[in-house]
Length: 94
Image 1 (cartoon, rainbow, N blue to C red):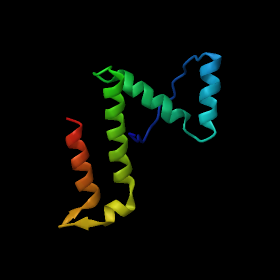
Image 2: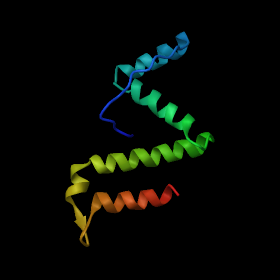
Image 3: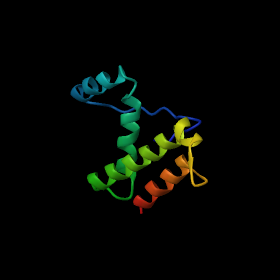
Image 4: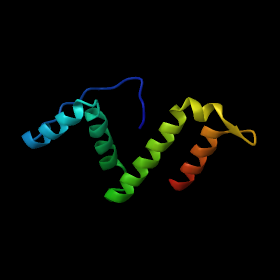
């Protein structure tokens, strides 16, 4: 997930059933993340759902690794583990 220094609010209208389902995720503080991820997937140049989801998963994996203090502090053969894993995952994005 991309993190931004500045988030811009945007209003959308939802059906009651969509609102109710999204509200359940709001309790776990995931509603905004779900909406942003869905919008990002729709706006990618590749609209095929599997490919867009796969790419989003790879992006999330890179973000998770880069946010991990453990991965940043470990190294193997002189290479930072976080950077090594990130570069391997980015190869899959091609």
